[in-house]
Image (cartoon, rainbow, N blue to C red):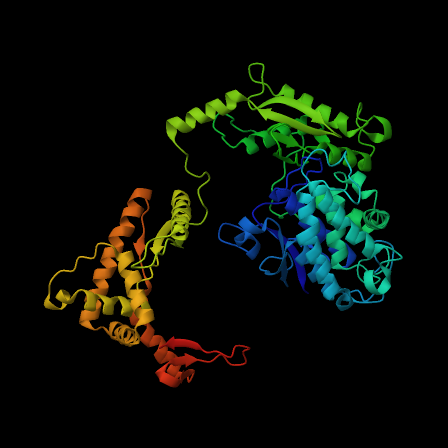
Length: 602
């Protein structure tokens, strides 16, 4: 039986994204949104999902390998009971939602928003679905991500607003409102009022609904002006299947199955004297505070992230609102009104209890990490980092240097970094310098992490231009033929003059082309001139590398010269080589839209 499992990239998603006006778009929030899309699609399209086991040190998945730039889940398909050993078939929330809609076993699944359709999995997909998915990814989501100013939730500029990100959001909502309107949308074009395409839920609805749901608090005033969008979102997010998806994600069911859990009420220990990660230190403090204030909810993720603006503080804890919602839903666990803990009537009360618990975590009368706690909006807890904590770790850094990664990398790998790559007989330009600096930085990071790094400088030291340079040297420096040394003081001027002769003189051009053939064939004189030109360039390149403190190993185009013949022979043996006019050896790609062959040898 085919199994579908969710594997997370570099880390599991946070329990909830930030939903205040200053929320960050950091990867945990992206991971939460993508996981919620996957869970909602699973519920809508009747395709069960499980959590893939976290990979061990000797295992990897596409999600793990691509973790640094995906920041989200991958869908694994396998026939194994636990989802292990699966192959990646879709990445990200939109991709997973689209895939699940296509493999849906239900020929006419009931719509999560209350409607129903007669189309099966294949009927839920078409060009319009892709268009809306692209709209969500490239228009709606970026416009909401750019609305990080705190004024957005309290200042609405209306449908004709002229203010920055608000205007972009308004334009996106207008497009959605038109598509969902009973008058301008319609079944054929927009699919009525509760679906973007057709009369049943599609991956497009999953993506749009989740994105608007997660931003709904931040854009509440603006959203209220679009009746069709508001009705559409409300119908979906209050449906049993959407609520089930939220519960699934918040409960951690789709997190890696080997993730360790914290014993209820237990305090997580961390040595703040040696722990230099501010995020880890602050997260530990809020985790312990929640466990102290509400032991029954000790496993709740504190959802700590950096504040988007320093005016709010350094870090913020966004757990209070969802924790309050969970308490209300659970009921019966406390002695207060509605089963809530005593004294808890709002998210602000939850936040206040957490703050009190943080303040109780003191050493010599003050918290070792956190300073200036505050509660903003409906329950966002902000804080600043103690200056004494920063001073202590800055002094350690100055005294002992940057510590080696801890724990060390689980896999020791050989890495090849190809960078710089200037051309012989030409000056480096800014593109080469940019590549040189970035490549050197990447190498140093990999070496610092304990990997074996090969620093490859793939210089342009072969090709047609050398036939031109060889011919120009022969004509301009006839003493070279007599065995005398050649003193070329400015190779750039030498190259420009040779290029001008090549463009203006047909005889010179023909001789240059013959020199290329002779060079590749190993002609002694051509090789000698070629080495002289390469040595002159290397001396200039080395001046730059020395000044930048860059180390490279040259492995230029000429490195492959003696490896070309065996490749051509292999093509010929397999009957794939075609000799064209002029003797050029080419390979034609069968069943290809390309009408020009690949030339393997001139």
